[in-house]
Image 1 (spheres, rainbow, N blue to C red):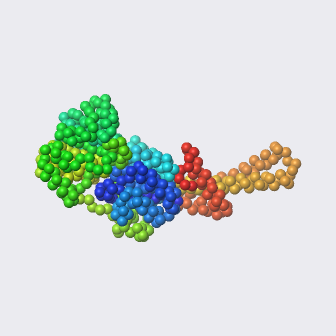
Image 2 (cartoon, rainbow, N blue to C red):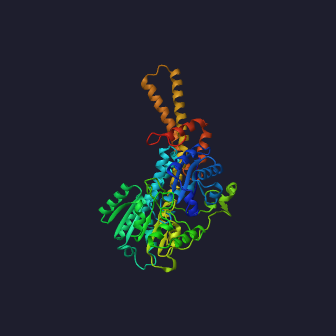
Image 3 (cartoon, rainbow, N blue to C red):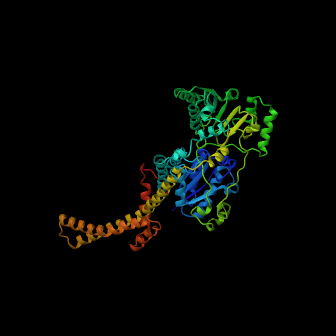
Length: 535
C-alpha cells in the first residue's frame, strides 16, 4: 500500500474557490466514510481548514487513487470536479510525508512558523480514529507530524519567523499610521464578532495591545459574556452584547475583528456605510464595484472559530504552497490521465489579482476591519468606502509573502528532511515484520512436528529428557534464524528495501495468506484495542 494526498490550499486556489470548497464537520465524516468505501483506499484522514482541504489515504493504485480522491473531494466540497481540478495538488509516498511534516512545522502556513495548525492536525487524527478510518499508517504519520511540529517549535526559533495571524492582521491595519501597533491601538474601542477560539485570540490580542475597550458580540449571549469575563480577569475592559446590537456598536468603535461560522455576510457595505453616515448610494456603488470584480473577496485566518457566532462548527487553520507536479513523487507521464493537474510539469494555480486594501483617496481611517472568517464575514466592498480600511486573507498573504525568511526556517527544513527519512525507514522495517513473524511461526511448527515424531520413535523418554531435547532444537532454530532476520530488517529499512520481504517469502516458501493474517492481527493490535481502518 502507498500513501497518497490530494488537496488544495490558499496557495493553489483563489479564495473564491476555497470558500465554496470548505467542509463542515458532517461532510468531513461522510467524506472519510465514502473514501474508505472506495476500492483504492483502506485508510483515510482529512485535514480540512479554512485555507486547506487535504485528503490522505493509503491506496493500492496511484492512478485510481488520484481519480477517486479527487472525485470525492469535489462531491463533498460542493465544487464541481472540472472546476476544482486545476487547483488540486498531489503528493505521493515520501513527498506526502514531507508535505504533512512541513505543514505541521508551519513551513507551509500563510505566516511561516504559525503553530495553530498542530491543533487542526490533532483534530484530523482524532476524527479518523473516532470513525475508524485511520489505520496504522495514518496513525503513525499524524502522530509523527504532531511530534515533529512540537520539536520544530521547541528546538528552533521558527516562532520568530512568523507571527500570530491576528497580530499580523493588526499590524497590517496599522500600516501607514507611522506608529507601532501598540501606539495605534491605544485608546481605541474594538468590536469582536464571534466568541470561538480565533475570536477569543483576537480579543486577547487587542487587550494586550492596549485598546481601551473590547465589545464582544455573539449569537449565543452566554459565550460572549464568558469571553468578556475572561478578558476582564486579564485586566482588560470588556463587555458583551447581542448580535442585534452590532449595528449600534459600529457607530462607537474604531476597530472590528470578525470571525464567525456564519454562511453569509455578517457585515455588508450598507451596514458599515450606515454606521459611518455614508450615503446609501455610495455603499451601493462600492458593492456594485465588487460584484463587477473590482474588489477581491475577503478570507479567513490560520484558525477560524470552531464555534462561530452561534457555536456552530467553523473552519480551521492551514495554508499551503503550489508544488510542481514533477515533485509530487510521480512523473509527468503518470499524470496524463489527469492532465488538468499539470501544465508542463507544474501545478496550475490561477493568478489572483486585487486592489490593495487601502483607504480610498488617502482619507483618514475611521473604521479598521479585520476579517478572519471562512466564508468571509465582511463584504469586500467596504474597502471602497471613504475612511474604511479592510484587511483580508489576500492582503495578508501578499504581505507575508514579502517577509524575510528567518535562518531558523532552514533548520526546520533539515529537521523535516531527517524525520521523513526516519519515518520511511520505520515504515519499511514494519512492512517486513509480518514476514519475519510468519517465518518464525513456520519454524516453531517444524520444531513441534519433529519433536512429536521423535517421541513416537523414542517412547521411553521421560519429561526432563523430552523438555531438554525440545529446548535444544528450539535454540538451534533460533540461532540459525537470528542473523538473517535481524539483517533483513536492517536492509528493509533502507531505500529500495521493500523487495526483501518478497525474497524472504520466496526463499522459505511462506504461505502469503499466513503473512496476510499476521498483518491483519498487527493492524488490529491498536493501543485502545479498537480497529483502525480496514485490514
